[in-house]
Length: 126
Image (cartoon, rainbow, N blue to C red; front, side, top):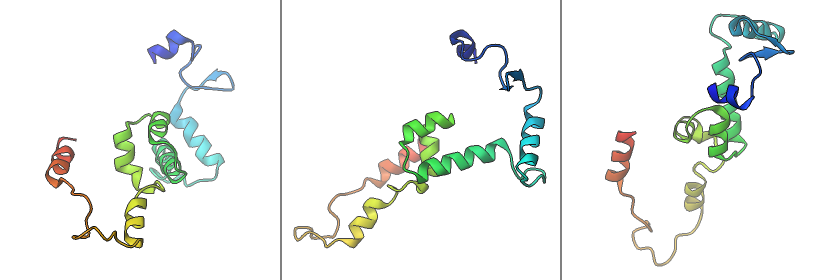
């Protein structure tokens, strides 16, 4: 936020609507939910719901993960761990591998090894 002020990205208010300060984001969001005729039950539609939807849609549409993560304000790691399964490239290599004939010079059916120990260690540290 300090950078926004320093660079002039915001003039006087952190959240504005029609040039005026929004006094309460909660009540403003609640009003928007009502105007959209969405569920007004507690906890049904929140700003986080919109972030979740945006992340899912970005992944479904094949967005670059680095750019999508920047847009959403989260790390690429969190984006891919949480929403990566929605990306069209997810499992594409596995699907192609199972639908193609194996190469004649592959004896075991596996053409490259996977270091499971290293993978598990990276996941444990994350």
